[in-house]
Length: 93
Image (cartoon, rainbow, N blue to C red; front, side):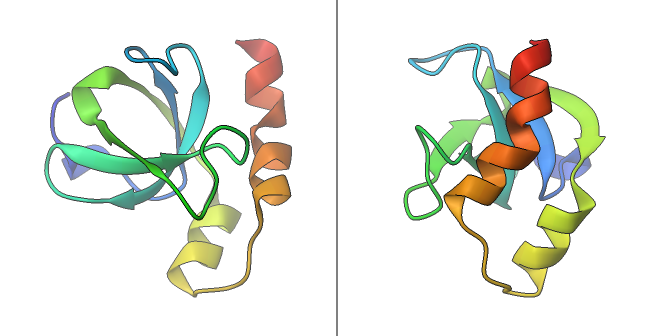
């Protein structure tokens, strides 16, 4: 999968290349058909999301609907909220 057509905001991904290899992220925004912005609340915070190519990510079928709703409705979220919802994924991988 090398395009963003099946990707949505709030989807859980794992980096497979780069300095952050093996880290779990959430899709924060879709830049274009090859790039997305990812955050994890720790290394990549909301004020500086990482722009990653889709081919450098392992995409999981899990979407965090509450995160997606908050982003789309411009509600206030913080980095600790992102760390909290990613905690089960970081423990299992």
